[in-house]
View 1 (tube, one colour):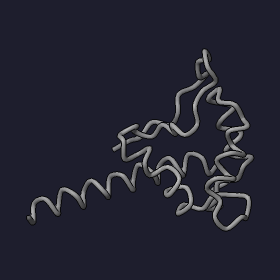
View 2 (view 1 turned 60 degrees about the vertical axis):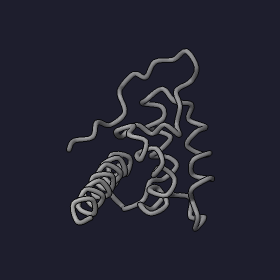
View 3 (view 1 turned 180 degrees about the vertical axis):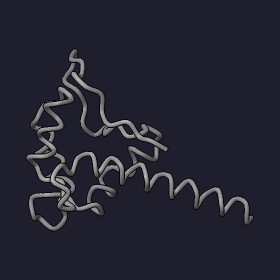
Length: 109
């Protein structure tokens, strides 16, 4: 029982670190929020339709401030990281037939 609790706690902590790393890679100005402009810039960099940025903000921006704080980001992408995508924002899919110019942020453990 204790070993399982430690494993679960470690797994949750690792997932938190992965999400925190991804959040920081998107929060270019380090103000604690991911703006639509920051997300749009990453979409363009990864060859993802920039319209996805507005969709993600609309879906996840609970306080309607036009940006995502860490809690909103974590709630939106928790399932992504829980499935083991290792930092890829699979809610943001590349355009059919396109290849990203750069890779999504790598996660360092």
